[in-house]
Image 1 (cartoon, rainbow, N blue to C red):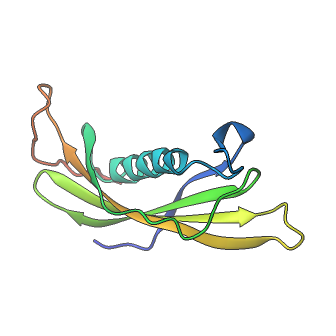
Image 2 (tube, rainbow, N blue to C red; image 1 turned 90 degrees about the horizontal axis):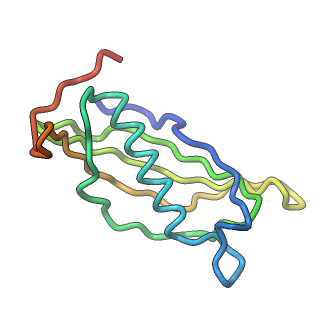
Length: 128
């Protein structure tokens, strides 16, 4: 079941995403991590999912305006009602003198399948 990380989202960071220090807000990156996790989970589960947990996120490197940030996802576990996805985040500094790619952070997210009333329900696996 475990797979190699697959590209999920790639986005260029814009000035609107910056904090007072001129780097990208951690919350902006967390939002993309959640989106990437949801997209990766949806590839494997064929019903509505909600985020229930994001394990500790530590930012190892800053992200700058103009960086192209890539989010890679892989499924770690599929349980009865939940799916756990790992997301790895890399930033490519394409505008630097010498383009470089740095590892920004990683996260583990857990999503739960829910029914029409918002209650946990057994997971139905996708055919993909």
